[in-house]
Picture (cartoon, helix red, strand yellow):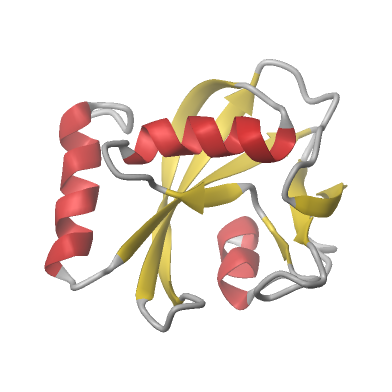
Amino acid sequence: MTVTSPEFVARLAAEAEAAGITGFVAAAVINHDGRVLLVRRKPDDYLGGLWEIPSGKVEAGETILDAVHRETAEETGLTIDQITDCLGHFDYENSRGGTTRQFNFAVTVEKTEPIVLTEHDAHQWAEPGDLPEVSDAVRNLITS
């Protein structure tokens, strides 16, 4: 079963729902020349100043894969060419006190520039061994 098959994606959602997860986020790990694209949350945002991979909420009526495509385009201006792997997930407490599950996918993009930020105040291509301030979950995802 491929990571882009409807059955695989439905199983991810069903497992999260069975675990009592209240929110889903889809995230893109974009690698280029051995570096990963990171975006920084605006200072006045929840967890302001923290660097993260492009990600966002799965909206009603949308699949996890639909969301990773949409959020990557919205947050970076980049278009996903291919989803190559599911890198697993991690759970965290969201700003409303519920539990969110972030599903992480390795992706390739059509072009790596220009990057157009709409929800973040900076971006960088970071070496996995030299990451800025990221959450432990993101650090483990990128360095494992």
